[in-house]
Image (cartoon, rainbow, N blue to C red; front, side, top):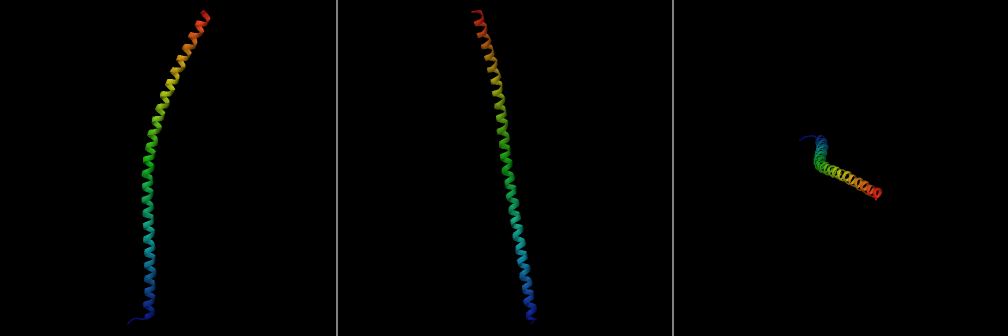
Length: 91
């Protein structure tokens, strides 16, 4: 048979190499999960971004309508004020 010390040394080196391989595989798996997690977060953030953009556009349109209504109300009030002034001056 072979030298018992050489066999022990080879077994130890094999064990160390297997542990290093296992550690490497675990790191790769964690990195893979991290990449998958990041990709899912990106997808989720993209959906949220699109929703916020649509919501912002809807609010801009609403603000434009309110501004137009405000301008119309202001013009009507000016007309009414001028009519009342005219009536008070004539009467």
